[in-house]
Image (tube, rainbow, N blue to C red; front, top):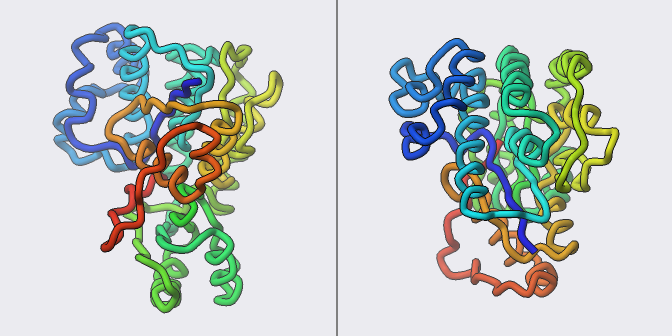
Amino acid sequence: MRAVVFPGQGAQRRGVGSEHFARYPELVATADELLGYSVQRLCIEDPERQLNRTLYTQPAMFVVNAMHWLDARARGCSPAMFAGHSLGEYNALWAAGAFDFETGLRLVQRRAELMDRAADGGMAAVLGIPAEAVARVLQASDAQAVDIANLNGPTQIVISGPQAEIMRLKPIFEAQPIRAYAILNVSAAFHSRAMLPAQREFTSFLAGFELGPLTTPVIANFSARPYGADNIAELLGQQIAGPVRWVESVAHMIEQGVSEFIECGPGDVLTKMIRQIRAERPELAAASQAPVPDVRPTPAPPEPAPML
């Protein structure tokens, strides 16, 4: 069984999508008209260095991921499930028929505006210890305003909260038996309680759209389970301030019989994350009848880049 997964914010880079834009002129024209700027110029040239700003990153990634999926579909790819990491979940829902491309881009544009508006927040990736250990350090450090935002791998956990707290926690975590504490280049505390105002506004915005039935199951970040027939808007709203439960999402897909994952988007960050999840949870590799890659050489291999 095959699943298609879409990456989110963090997979962008200058030149992204360059091999696809010429093949989908109508889709690109629709995006340009809606966004009010050339998404191709933003992605390929990034002359004003805006590609890494949330306001622009999220629409750009939605467009690029969409072109990757259209390529895969044209080659005959017909997955049994979809999933996406954070922003990538919108591509998964679009591919599964919840809304058309223009509606998806409108939703992403509004999401990006609301999330970009937040300030004075930060995020850091804690590498080398599981989520339970991260939670214990946060509790012992009285970091009450910091949340676990992304569970990207069994030992790749992203935390999110006020910038000052993220900085304060650096030496505290580095005193633990971790591989690294990497402060991420973001301006807001995504997937944390700091996003609750954005979540409320976005939920109201979603109410103005009719979301159609899914033709293929999509695994939700917030629940790590398939979307139901009547909870798409609810889960999309909760996703903004809730954690991305990627490990559980991947585990659920494997337990349902998925043995092959195809990443539709730039780079291979999710592919590496899934490989690491399988390696650090051998029962999943056995369930998927997939070979377990060795992720325990000395020195340790590089971690997949954190996805936001």
